[in-house]
Length: 249
Ligand code: PGA
Image 1 (cartoon, rainbow, N blue to C red):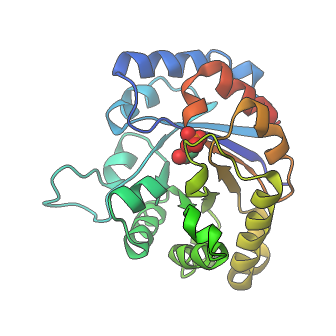
Image 2 (tube, rainbow, N blue to C red):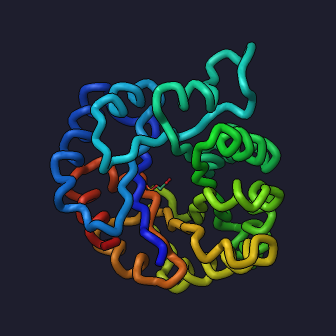
């Protein structure tokens, strides 16, 4: 019922040449993508236009972030309308690296989500608890708080939102949530969203992220509320990324 999404988050890695080569290596194999899987990559801002201009329809080019303001004197920031003007339609918002390293608050994330939606684009909203939250049994509460950034939207805007559950303790650590832990949290997220948006959430894609690899992807993606993955490290290698895409098929 819900098509899966497999999105690669390249973070701050790769020169222009390396990123172009990686993009080409992935898109050359688009015939191998399962029909039911939407494939996405999120390169650094600087490469977005060039990769987008290659017009590979089967590989969606997404941004990793955006500014929380529309325009103006915000040195170093990139606005949603700038992204839109080069053809970008999808934006990752509230990644834990943005929240933790750059101090983005739930309010900042909410503002970004609204700007993305108002520009008729799609936010991929990341939520995730840190290790000590889970150890103290606070993980559901933390996720519930972070979901606040998508709880006050008009239903026709909410409809476009994609969620990514990324437990911080599993990002780049080689440690994944078990498929059961992922399913438990995805179920919880869908339930919380359905309290507000009702049946609409049946079509909401909830991705899992955190050390997704070719050898664990299939089991995680097989869970009923897991609708694909947001992949960091393993998306930087075309063979591994392809294997993960196929695991979602
Ligand atoms: P990872 O990163 O796959 O390298 O753990 C995931 C992410 O941060 O989106």
